[in-house]
Image 1: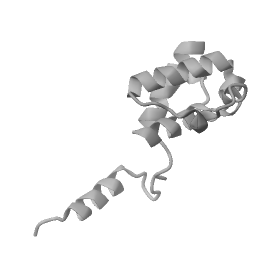
Image 2 (image 1 turned 180 degrees about the vertical axis):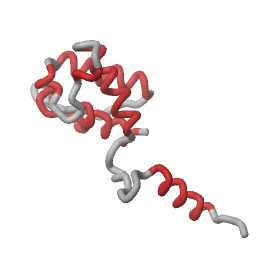
Image 3 (image 1 turned 45 degrees about the horizontal axis):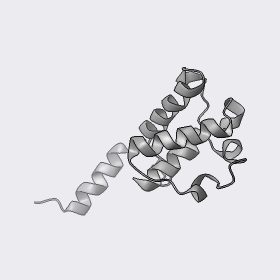
Image 4 (image 1 turned 135 degrees about the vertical axis):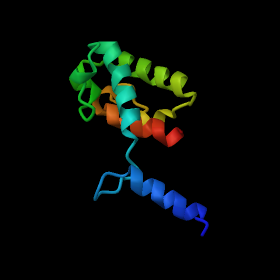
Length: 111
């Protein structure tokens, strides 16, 4: 009996989800969050363990310029162009609302 592409896909999805819990498709992959966490840490502390992925970047020592520098680095790394509306076109608020996980969501929406 041959497996259909749909059944293979459903098996792969089930195998990669945590037991008993399906992964939310709106959530970025954990490895993407960790890569962005490391990029963030390189700009501020150097230690990824000191970066809370859910806390706004401003609360972790980032100013507007550093946030925009990180966004540019993400665009270059992933060869994407992030629309300013996705991270907050008001340059005075991006660092106060964006988190590492939020940036990962934005990046994953372009991939």
